[in-house]
Image 1: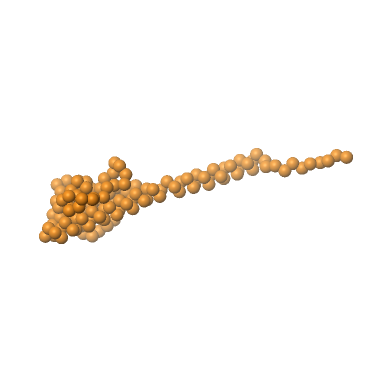
Image 2: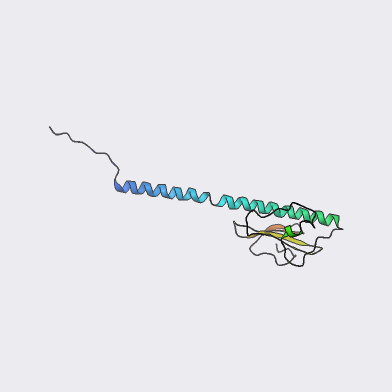
Length: 142
């Protein structure tokens, strides 16, 4: 009497398909962890720019409605003491800065965002938005 056994096993094709699907899902999951830190840093930048706006407006309120004038684009933290603050916000990463262009009657403060790669801009006119190019003067570009 002969006993027949049925071997139940996965074929090579089934294993390859399963490994491929697991690899694709792993790649998608890994990609979802790349953008949140960038978005968080951008949120910090936007908040910091709003703080600079508040400092500039407070300065103008104390000085007959006139803003601090800069002759060129400067890092706002360099005029932090002039704005009346000892604790100005700094960019969450190294190598990137906040920028300020101002006259006694207008200002533009901006920062370069990581995602999307654009400039977040706040103007003395009250306009807030994003632009693909950095402002070149104290005139609001948005």
